[in-house]
Image 1: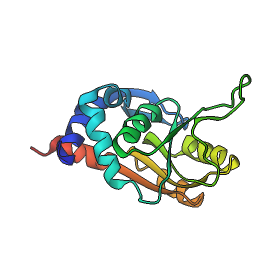
Image 2 (image 1 turned 45 degrees about the vertical axis):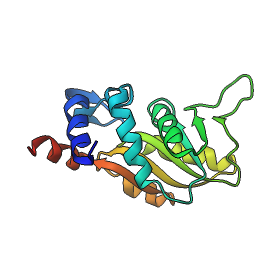
Image 3 (image 1 turned 60 degrees about the horizontal axis):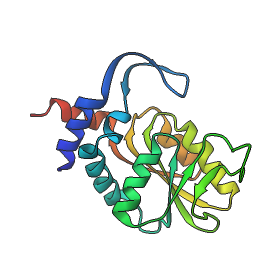
Image 4 (image 1 turned 45 degrees about the horizontal axis):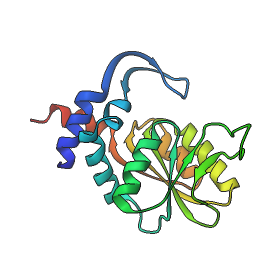
Length: 177
């Protein structure tokens, strides 16, 4: 599926209007319901295909953030052959007590995968957790950059954001014939 057609489909199925409280605590009149594109193979496959095109060549491990980043990471791992790790929002209090599950990240270049980035609060926390495990976290991959400070916040933490679309891209794709 062409990138512009994918943007238009994501906007059509995942863009909701109303009143929503975002993870950042901000209130928004629009919301991108990531589950509308991560739970559908007809969209998840093309999203993974296009994310693979923006994936830096030096990435060794994909790190999917619970919950939205997990299906994206699994699909991208299948597409690229790169191993994956899944990052919890909180460390387990039982079993291994790990913050992440999957392959070892110590000493490896890691890209954190998220669905939608607003201020990038969770990406920053997860990157910090992975760095504490010895990962060399350099990148954040997202399907949508809401253009509300996330890119600058990530840059301040030494992370390069590579987003498939910005909110502006999705809006423009929805109005273009």
